[in-house]
Length: 522
Image (cartoon, rainbow, N blue to C red):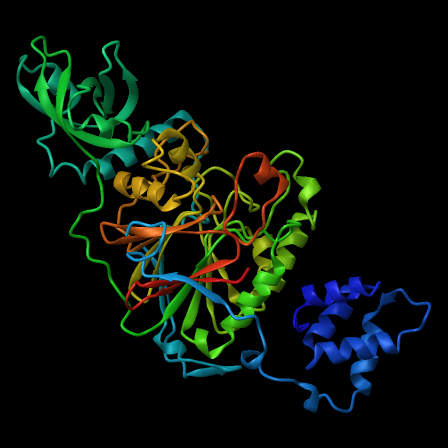
């Protein structure tokens, strides 16, 4: 593997028994031919020296008379391990079902980088729902009231066309036997002694009990419910008007008629997540192969890189994590990740969101990185938005969410509805509920803000998550749901909780057709 980055140079030096000053490594990485420069630096190093200094490297480079001839082949012509294609088009893949800020390329002439030729003027990125720098929550009671009222109003607006909604206090005054409909937030779910389901719904005026009989076809839908999600029901009031017998149950859902948008040209995006630099199981070689492939003519149309969280392994995320760390300092982890990011083509547009291993608050929505981390993450001017964020790439709307709530969905719902082996099905449930993390007070930590940033107000064309380290994708009402796997081999902790990760995969999305090819680099 060519020594084109500081991380590779450090590894090569360590294999030869040397330490080096950081500035020395940087100078070697910036040399026209880092391999030759490293060899010459070590050949001329005094025998008693154990550390390579920046001054020594500088003297070697100055004495070199063949710098221009030692530039080597372009990255696109390097002999990298070929990436294998796993599958394309979710309908045929195994294991599947089928006020915004704007950054536009502007009048920029075509640019050639290595073997790639790109026209930056054709690029267009819009980012919505980014709460970075706009957090207002203080944790006071009223903050929670505000965010739940906002959730209710937004989701209720998507259900009012389905039922003739009446507020709870109005229903309480209706005559027994009347037909009634209610839109409410699920505040309780329990089974009766007879096996029926009692669902308590809450709106802004009060609560009302709703009974779903066990022999009704909609009884299976009750098993898909999570606390705090918003649904609509209609049915008939009991003779004493104290309970509503439910005939129909509705979710906010994605309309079946949803027609996704596509790009006006053939351009592609790589959608990945969970890189976990800093872990001793980070798959550096797979990342090198991925980065090298991006420099080949085959990948010339891959102009966007979208990373759905967990760029680094983090510190103190789970018990005894320190035993599984290759880099123990969180800032050094980000420095290393930034170096790995430099391996991808410099003309790529990179957008990222944080995850639960990143150095931001755990409670969702998670803001983007603070200024100190942004100063470290300077490679290719990569932009870090909040988790979740709605990123529209040349007309294709991609909802990026790290995916911590998937653990909760998988734990709460039946296996046929949500499982780690088919993570995209758990994502279908979130699309149906139009909320990325509906249940409050469980495994997923939620922060109250002035509005609920976790509601899917707009139907995305693509829903991209990570977190569970499993690869899965399919289409739900024409929305492509993708969980993109990871770049970390199985850790001891993952073994202890029976997680067998899908590592070293890079889903490549055609933005003009929304067809997808998954390439394997591990």
